Length: 183
Image 1 (cartoon, rainbow, N blue to C red):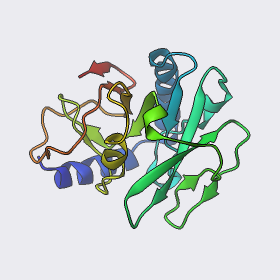
Image 2 (image 1 turned 90 degrees about the vertical axis):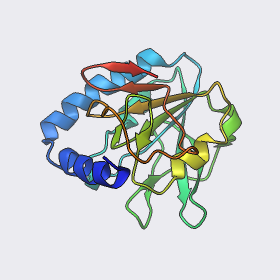
Image 3 (image 1 turned 135 degrees about the vertical axis):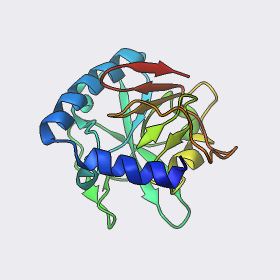
Image 4 (image 1 turned 180 degrees about the vertical axis):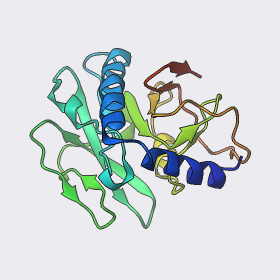
């Protein structure tokens, strides 16, 4: 299937999950994330768009073993800038309904050790499908080679994606509630 077909299918699959299924999966995935990242890491996470039934990673912010960062998005350039956050950070909702941190404590992409990446689905090679705007591919291209690209999803990978581009950046690991995949 193509990215467009898979995107449509998995948006519908995610929308059909119950609140209980999302909360149960979230608890499992947050625990798995903490198992995968070394203490004292600079970790870039995403903030959930509630209308898209996205995984809520904000409970992780109470863990002070890590330095947490979240992005502000620039839609005209399809870029993201990450800023320091913690459990006391108050987030703003932008015009696209995306929570964003205050512009304080900016970190360079080269200083990030782990990026926890949202996705709709990926394939067995770690090629991911997001919402199709390229924000994460643009950002990950700026990160150091050793940066752990950690995808989290409610669903297992598909066998392949028909229209992967050479500039698509692959995940290193995919965590699902049932299984972990290493690419």
